[in-house]
Amino acid sequence: MITPKKKPCKECGNVTYIFSKGRCKPCAAASYKPIRKSNKNGNENKEYYKRAWDSHKTKSCEECGKGLPEFNPAYISHIISKGSNTALRSDIRNHLLLCVGCHHKYEFGDRSSMQTYERVQAIRLELIREYYKVSKASDIPLQSLPRK
Image (cartoon, one colour):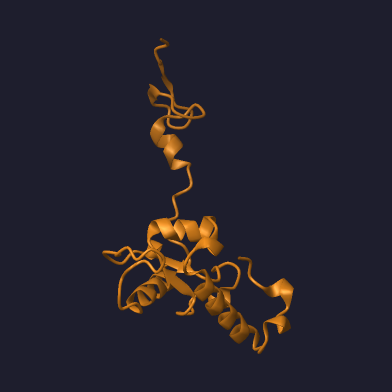
């Protein structure tokens, strides 16, 4: 086994164990970017998620019926994703209350096999029609539809 040797730090000159790029651990750590603790929409998102949670009388997963014990933003799933249409990001109708397992299935699995699929499609169509101010789905410009 190789035993580490103490060497002088290139930045502060202290003789210690070298951590990164010839620097001691405190000097190396000082050069790293700070971890961003919240996003720019942090408070707005928290308010939306809390409103969405409070809008449900029964706090249970809409897919499997599992009870949800307390508020957690992970239980709120957007029907039309936040990135695909920022105007609908905070629309209170644009969400489902799902347990973590069903939320993962909704986001990354086969949505069409879920029990809530038909209802989600109806809500989705209603939101899109309202947003684009059209009466028929065929009038919506296809390139502007959010992806499933």
